[in-house]
Length: 379
Ligand SMILES: *Cc1c(COP(=O)(O)O)cnc(C)c1O
Image (cartoon, rainbow, N blue to C red; front, top):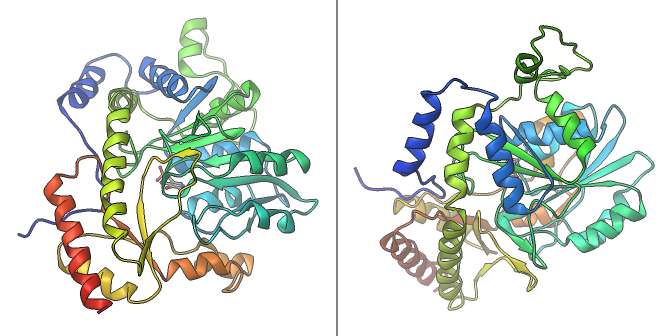
């Protein structure tokens, strides 16, 4: 079988495997010491006071919406150029996601367009660090403060990124990470919220455990069986063996970010020779974590996509604008024309392979396929 290159892939080594095995041989399989160790490791890495680990990035988004008290009738501003879970988390709490368009060059939420979407019902903004580039958080903070909104960062693409010297994970009131295998570090499935707000953290810690006021470790310590469910929560717990994997993975993150940036530089260099194909814009004050490397072409996108796939290169499209999904069209009456910048971009983008385990020969194969096809298509 011909080798195919995925667009993203995890890197697992012997030390990761050993870390998981060690937990499997220990007393706690879930909600034990490894969960806290992973929370502390991520909190320390990004520079946040609190970190709450949960079972997925989606659960982390939901926990954040619960923590800030989103409920029926509340509106939350979200960009359309994201994974559906960003908006879904608002709906889980019976809120209404209000789509605000992205900037055409960066595909990040455009702060200049947000104010028009704010109503008396607006409670929060969820900014998405699309592809791994942090949004303009100074501007977003100004808007959030002026209208008394909570600022949330969906930082699922940007673990390890920086904005004006500050790390993703500290840029908003609540910051969301995912540890799905295509993300920067993995726990299989997993997620985390980082925040400096102790009250939010407390709410999320009980939310992930059915909103039961004490967990099993606390009950064991107190020698009591008594607990009360104080609100409606979920089982969003992450296991100890997943968190052990997370701790082991996090140690390698800086080297992996460097490798992603190297690959991006190689792609940048290649694209500079072909004006018909553009990379996304990158602000000068950010350190980009390159979860994705997205190229953009006004014509021939589907031909180029097919050529890559034929060459065994599993390029992808990120994303179908969320407001165009049938669910949102049906239940929130969204339609084409609502976010023209995202809609136009959706027809023009391709995500090239980008993961730290990519070999130089893989990069060469992507680059030479790109060269060959561009010359053919734009001859
Ligand atoms: C991956 C991702 C999520 C969801 O994370 P899961 O861990 O898969 O639930 C949410 N938002 C964005 C932008 C993502 O990339």
